[in-house]
Length: 326
Length: 256
Picture 1: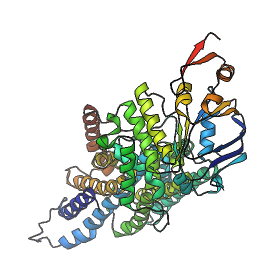
Picture 2: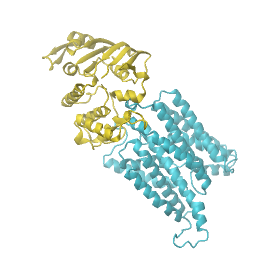
Picture 3: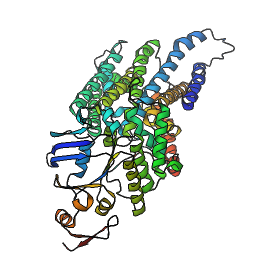
Picture 4: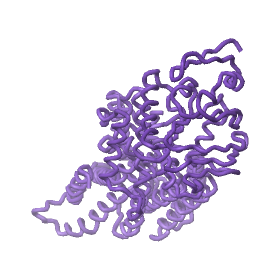
């Protein structure tokens, strides 16, 4: 256990209980005067906090793995087309009028991500293990899924259905409970384990594909681990919370300078930091005084984008270069 | 130590019927004009290209039949245009060379973290980089970076060191220093195979020179013999003559 991981775990252990107290209704842990305090904490806020940490962890780990695989700091988990495909599945369940059934939306989303994973696997199996072809295939799946999603939205039966879909796509943890935790936690954990197993292969790729092969990398095994790992983490996340951007892109950047920059050493800290970031963002969503609750996806981008820009400018001033060292 | 042997290597358009037996403890230079197939031959010897015909064996075992990590433990390969994706420290970069030894938990070849650290230390010392071990690679000069990349290969402690134009982008002093360090590795019993463009370097510092022309070996032997002026003139289509004595020869070019 590295010091960075310990610090992040400690931060999570502090942040989770705090997030249980914060919200439209504040709870004073020492004077639980509210009659439904237990219900609010255990029935509403705890599952939401667990879900935030779970999804953030999945996105952080997937982002770190994708950046490592593509050797590019701009990569994010959406690039393989798994998130758009999962979202397409979910949108289809709205279109078919099934979204009111609790099982339908997550199931459709999982089928969507599974379909994208199968397609990627098929392409990987037919290529010689090269990074470029594989990534381009993923981007094609992403744009195809995006186009189909727009088509479905434009064909929505009425304006209400349309706005329902668009709102869902913004991503949120509102009203999610233990059922969603049960659905998302096991695949996310399994996905993070698979991404961690991909670590040595990602390390070999630091020096380019030719060197990676000369170091004994099996490119197809690495692709299989990535497809399964990213598919499980991202697919589960989209199934229960819609598309939550930004975490997968930003978290690896926040954590990388604190590691030795080996991709394998980034997976676990990025997972922990992703969980922490999403938990903080979701708590903030509950606190901002708006008519309805601020959508998580919007909140993350609102806070994250300026911060990310500031970080990049600061790193540039310090002369730190990542990616494209050539 | 075991010989690295190529038999009837053929890659359509790149190599034709190459037979070559390389011996450990020697520095072999592969030379030839652009497009002669030097890099292809080196990549084949490293087991990185799928062969249609022919085979490469190391110690009698076909490279294609070896598990990738086992092959990587025997043969270290430094590509022509090495890239470094993240701004890692020199020590981290060099430690990547230990990856072939860090496989499955109960594999007999697996080394302990202490053994890996010791190998990294030896590689850093051999390339004279111990003082720079914590420096980010973006802060290295061209020569230091070339040495760090070579140290990465050394850290894997392979029986064979294969390097594709390791002296490109190095000034005279750094090139000479790197060749001296690689010669020292051959002195310890490793096989060293270098693709070189600098014929004088091959003449003065290699034990053996293999000349390629359009995918075929046209000369193979001690430098004085393989690189005689008449052959250089014909293969490179220049008018060449050697000046100076053994070990300090210089190539002079006239009008073609």
